[in-house]
Image (cartoon, rainbow, N blue to C red):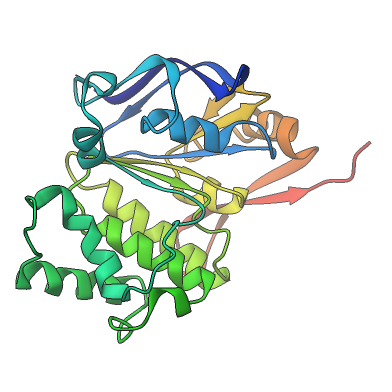
Length: 264
């Protein structure tokens, strides 16, 4: 059953469209990755889906048309994490995470002790235990991204949109972040969409991959079940000639490996 759908989304800046007539569907509990070359429209698409960028077309989340909601109600249902947080004031890491509860709080209402405990637990979950009182601005770029992820983990959103969250993280934390996203999205009443720079992460953690090219959908693949030759053909249109192999890691789990081939 469709949980989220985008229908004919067209958006851009000024009079120039960056994406045109984008349509797709997402099931409940699904983690969808969006990949494409630089300038293909990944960030523009996410901004349109969450309503912060004017667009044509419509988005439906759990049978509700988002364009009919107020900005506050959209923010309560959809969490968007940009590549940069935009936070430029002195604020503790814990207070950043507590922002995730804002849609649940009334005017001038302060977070409860239970919310503070949940925020501290979320920081520990992303690897930032003991940094609750550290100034957010003094964190590394990777730590800032993890802190903002923790903010999202405590929110009550139905749909999570993340723009290249792995770009500032090292090898270990990239995989930890995608594992956390996978766990978050698998809970009832949730789904997530993430643009990714690293195709290896996308292939091994996402249920579906939406491939963008020149502002349109090149295709959608399902890494766990689609034939290798189909995926190779589609991915080669973005990355050049590539080969895929299915392997088993030391833990006995299946995984996909992508190798860049020499152009003929």
